[in-house]
Image (tube, rainbow, N blue to C red; front, top):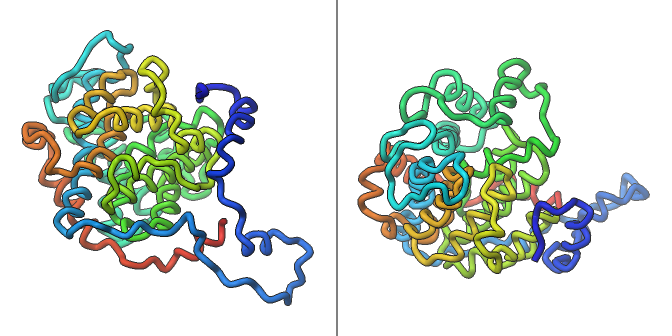
Length: 371
């Protein structure tokens, strides 16, 4: 095992042991990269790489809907439970229920920016019938400036990278500056991902691509994009019937060293003391998957994640997405379902995305072209 905060050089060398999990470049990609290729040379046909093959759904319609609703409600529930310990040092306090409080003094069941951004993303799919970059950016700006999709009508919690991106969008649109430095590798786009996985549940390639695309609105570093694509792929498996062992199994995927090591599953062998729970996307993803792996039900996964403290709401919201996709609404504590704010609205949005999820994806071939 290795500490994922090790230097880039150390991690790049270490990650070579998992090169078998990195796909070989396709003949089509090699052809496109051939600068000696004559303009009139015949082009190889586009072919889906094997690692992008969809997981056939093995659930009934009702079971699949239960998991889709679980992914979005799980996000909100994890957020609401975790906010109690948000920004605290580990083990200074402990949470055993959905009790509210925390730095924003929320009522039990109220949630923070994680859920607000997820609702903005879900609304974008419901309104446009697809992912719309400008539509999503505008929805986030309305949340930031007017408090739309906020539990109390105002934006009281927003990450620095997200705020900077939205202010750039307001000022310059797509021409706005994008922070690609290490300081921009936050978890803001990971914590809101469930709507993309639900809407694109029939297509792994669409989920993979669009998990990264929705991230680019606020977070565009490659490490964040890879983290979102990896998590989207794991959600795809869970939403289509995979259990924990299948959903979190190592798979062939094109990832940078840190996400590749997470994909390989090293977190499964780590102790609680070796897990960080900061707002760095790698820390959040590793901590959330660790919490889900070391539990066998939704409630325990959320509490294990939340009690890691620090960015507790985001770690628990991320754990809630995958735990909700694995165990469904039917596996959630009834008292949490009754207490979480906007439960019926959130459940209704998940149902809407589930019902309008496209069977095919006309843009799949754009994804194939990249590998």
